[in-house]
Amino acid sequence: MMSFLAILRRYPVARIAAAGILLFGFAGAATSPYQPVVAIRELGMSNAAYSVVIFAAAVTNVLASILIGLLADRRASYRRPILVATGIGALGFATIYLMPSALVFALVAVGPLAIYGASNALIFAKVRSHATEFTRADGEAVGALLRMMISVAWILVPGAVGLLLAGGDSMLPAYLISAVLALAGLAILAALPADLARQPGTPRAGIGDLFAFANPGLVLRVAGVALASSVLHVNSAVLPLIVTGRAGGTVADVGVIVGYVALVEVVFIFVWAAVCRHLSMQVALVLCMALYLAYLLGLATARAMPQVHAASLLGGIAAAAIITLPIPYLLGLIAGRPGLSASLIAVNHFVGAGIGAGIFALGTALGGYQGAAILAGLAGVLGGLLLLVLDGWRRQPMVME
Image (cartoon, rainbow, N blue to C red; front, side, top):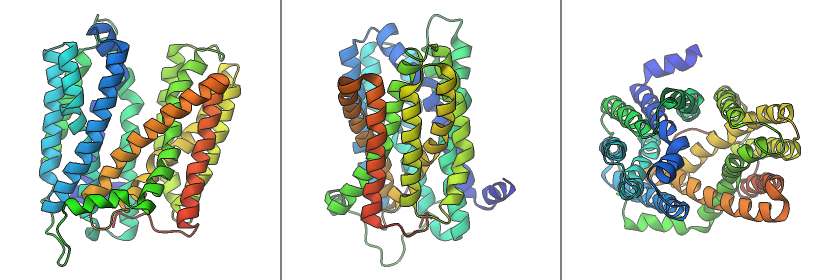
């Protein structure tokens, strides 16, 4: 841990980026668990309308991530887009709180908050643009720290916000909390160091770079990562249903599981980073997908809460790798384009969610929630094996370079 603290002291861009990602996570974690409650129960949005809004917001987030990433690469400027996107997000959260209505919620979710979602990938792109400042070991440590921040945000914030607002008759103040957290992130990110000049001989990014997204090799690799990521989306759907169903648990048990799994993830992010010093990301991903399949099998067959808790510990260990290992892999898929490469994080999330929705629908039709869990685990292993076939088993350093 001391070495990680030393790295944060040594590299201002890493220190500020880590704090920025943490506050980005805080802002999202304060509202995401309560978003359906606010939209449907408090603002009167129908289930169908809410589904359309969430899908449209996801599409906007992907398009915004790609276009902003392309613009950032073209101008070799990452700091300004980060600040603009973060400021827009703070304004969006505040607007929902100050002007609560179904229409305002829909417009803000599809617009400002979708753009705000692109700031996370832009922060990774900003750090990657400074990769020449890091040693290989320090680059790996910085990457692990940034990825850890994503999980740290979810350990306490959802529960803390829930407890804070439990006595009230509305969850809308959660959006005020998110606005304040986003503003705090904006203040911190304003201290990011200036962008580095474009390396001599590096061509400026242009519309033609978008054709990289049609490259078969890139498409297959993103598909492999998305298959692996889809298990997390399916798990988020089936876990509460199995816990409050056949396992005999309560909604409170779900909250407890989510909290301690996030804590396990934080610890094992560093373990998996150490593993990847000796194994390739592809091999490590296959191993973690096998572990996650074992977790989902345990969850699917659980008939009491002790079985769910035991399986969830294994799931947390594997999820730490699923959440974090693909990020540096995606960041390296489009050479010399940190912004466009970072947009693949949003693309992966979108495609993974779509695959997860399909798996959930097919799995529940074939074998209920248990069938969906098992089918998701098998799809995840398939994704890991696809990357192994495409890239081989030899280790390639997981460095932001």
